Amino acid sequence: MRDSIIFICYDLPMEEDSAHKEYYKYSKYLKKNGYIHIQKSVVIKYIKNCEAFEGEVTRIKHNSPKSGKIYIWQMSYEKYASGISLVDGIFPTEELREEIIEF
Figure 1: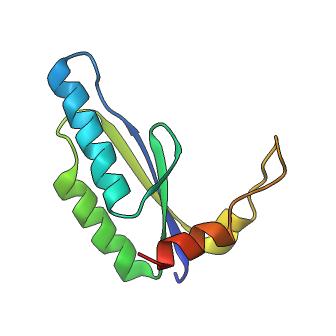
Figure 2: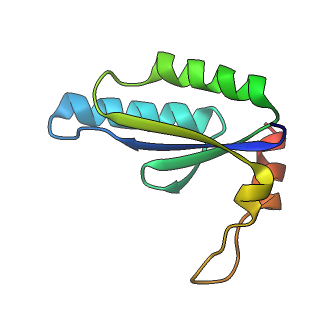
């Protein structure tokens, strides 16, 4: 699959101070590596091909906290671009691709 989006949802424990630190460390890791937060615990990133997806999954596994839940999907860029924004009618497509290619 070429031109894809990696989509990650995570739900990490936040009850203890150490868990808070892990959450923010993980969130910072994702941002540093080109992921864009579309919700507090939902991030996306443009990837060029299947091999890039597999590499991202490996890096995510290596840098993920040991507790909590992390879900990862890959979807084609075309499928992502067919999304609909119910509030303002604007769905970020080319902006996502342009921003991430610059990294």
